[in-house]
Length: 305
Image (cartoon, rainbow, N blue to C red; front, side):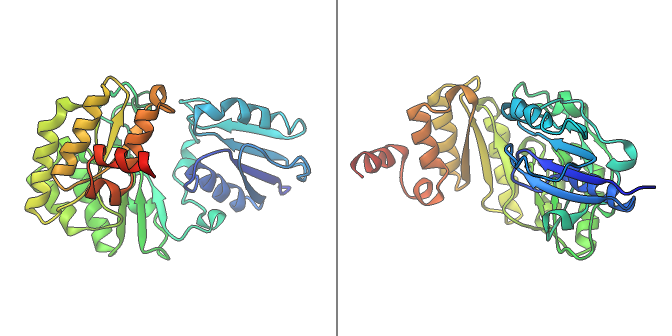
């Protein structure tokens, strides 16, 4: 079999691209020469590859990614990712390969042990892309023993209690620090799973979300459960500008502040660029400001700066 020249392009996204790392493993096993470039603008002086894979995560970069694909008329080009097609999938064979962490000089392991979600939040692509939640792997499918830290990308692992316990046991057995990168569902916290969370070495802090005021009771119950096992502070992503008023958004931030939690304001596309939401994010997303002053005090300081 003649070796191929394979070019992997990460059009967007900040973290190492899992699909491209698995493709790298696949092609290197075949003896192919694999290289990686990043960004939606790349040099036209690259050696003409035999095969090109382009991964585009964000829909705002779709046109640029498609234009990039046209730069390789003599190559076999594959383009995928949620920014281009929600139904793009790796073959089953490649999906379950161990990622090539050397591709990104990655010093931690990353992967999914479950796919999908039980929720159907209208602002989220996961239900359409991955469907209902299901277990798909354990950590040994993607854990590199050289690594002492693991990033789990599961979208709602607490919705699978037995699977969560199974994965937590594996993480604990290998003495790993773990990052639940996509956050956990605060509405699914129980006395049983907070005990498990308290037993793990979580790095950085636990992350949750509070998307609307209707779930206030569940959020506060979750905070109390965490406190009971010694987890006093977590970070909450607060969605703003989606089916909520500015006053609703400020209320949720202030409520989290009262509870001693950290907050991070996520601005929906329809309010990005609006001055009041920019001010709110500038306050909430900087812990030194959020913890020490009210939003009104922050506005005064900013106006006089």
